[in-house]
Image (cartoon, rainbow, N blue to C red; front, side, top):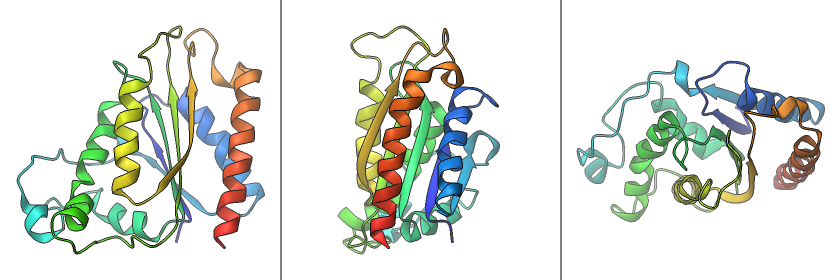
Length: 196
């Protein structure tokens, strides 16, 4: 079982988000932390249709590539989401994943029969990659959604990291950002180790 779930929210191959994920997995490999990377743009994940099925059953009616992720969220020690910024928010596919966790949310807050262990400690990290120069609302929308997502999957969102101007300076060439993120990844690794 993978200890950490890493969600790649970018449709672009081998660009900034993937470079960031490679930095994370390299550190995990060094520390013998198991993980699974989800390239969600290559996955079949149906949109939530607000049909109400999960509010009656605690489970989603759709059976697709999202289905095994519910159990993985439960058994994991943490989740990391890496997403480009699209219109001040996460990418559309990440939002689709978030919306589908309504099934977990419904099991907890509507049915009062959690489909996820609410007492288990898990550590979360959200990394947002903005291509443009910084502006006040650049990361606000994504952060609001991510706060809700991590609450839904019962994972403490301990680390947030924002990167801007990545269209001008790619992450793998941005020594300052690599250094800052490396510190957060090291801290994340220590948090995971403490979970045992």
